[in-house]
Image (cartoon, rainbow, N blue to C red):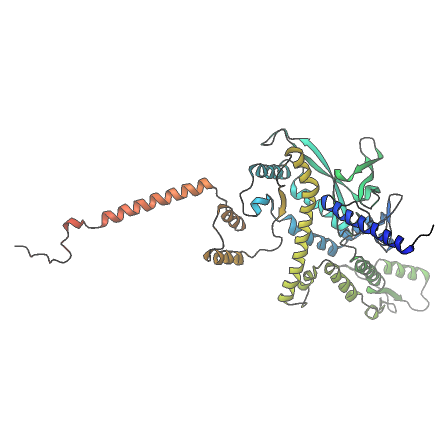
Amino acid sequence: MTIDVRELSVAHSSDIQKELRESRLRSRGRRPIEIGYTGLEVFGSLITGEIVEHNREWMGPNRFKLVDRMRKGDATCAATLMALTLPIVSTDVVVETREGADGHKPDPIVKEAADFIYYNLFEGMQESWNGWLREVFLYMAYGHYAFEKIFTEIKTGPFAGAIGWKEFAPRHPSTFQQYYFDQHGHMTGVEQQAFDTENNSYKSVDMPIDKLLWFTNQKEAGNPLGVSVLRPAWKHWKYKDGFYAVQAIAVERQGAGVPYAKYPEGSKGPAIDDAEETLQNIQAHEQSYVTFEEGWDIGFLDMGSSKVLDPKDAIEHHDQMIPKSILAGFLNLTQGDRGSFALSSDSSGFFTYSVQQTANYIAGVINKTAIQELLDINYPNLPTYPTLRFNKVGHISLEKIIEGIDKLGGQGFITPTIELENHIRGLLNLPSINEEEIAAEEERNMDKLKAETELMKAAQPDPQNQPPPNKKAEPPK
């Protein structure tokens, strides 16, 4: 029996095309089965490979020590992290419904769910929102940070009986020993080894990823470890720290002169011993002095400190590069004549975009891994999920906002509402108002207008006592 190779090739090609068509048809009805990999190298539940890090000093637990040395021991690194943190911490947060954001009246059940989330986040938690949010920002320093979602039954308040969050308990990344992944490279959980204060011993626990709020900075190829914002600044911090040490040694060894004594030839041992003791006890003091006999010479040797290379310029250069690594180079413009106002505005604008994106990311993690889960427990089958949102981050020019509202309102692009007025009042630190107050004010205005109208009518002359308009009044007889 002979087989035609051409017929076999055609048949094989036809089978492949048929399979592709069926695959496309299946993909229209449901999500195709995942067949690829993230590329992350994981051996024995340990994340390795150059995708994660190429510098050995930043591999393993040592990176946490480096970060702590930088953020706790260097003023510029600390200020850089504060520049990322404070604008978001000081920004107002709202929980809004999708319908309300689009200008439509929200579904009552969705509005109630939004009020529930707001109440739980800002009134029902053990720790304050701002206190917790400050710790969230450690994910930028370490590259990642996690919180365990602790649930409880709400006992009091308008949502008593519902299941809510008790707290988002911090889980420090240095306590994670192993990371678990599925076959395609998606993390499924971690092993934590931490100190158990009740038993005074270390204990290991496995935590699934859906139990955690996991924040990652600059996640790449499914790497949950992320990249520290201080990582690009590490080289400059290392050089600066070394140059500071060189400067300190130079000041110690050559900045101050070395005292010396020249004694006459033939001086005896006791006199020399007294001179040495005097030199050892020389100190800068308002009443310090030295007495010596004729022929003795006491002074300070010039160690040539002015000829030693001063590392000040190198220190200043590397210090300026640290905030530049997070687009905060405008922080250096106040140091001498280093830039114009326009340059500062452009630089701060890029930084503001970066900080706004950070706020959006934090809100996105909370919305996806916390809010939706809690709403599914308490409000099943919601038509839409309420979402947490940070207002615009950064400096707000009230003059420009008021001017813009005035122009848009005059052209009919903005409709005056209670929400808009209260928002403007909030920007101006003025008390807000409600519908009852507006109705009462309108009633007072109507009463005032009515009273003024009555006064105007009373002040007008009686038309019956007036002559006809086209007839002259006759003189009295």
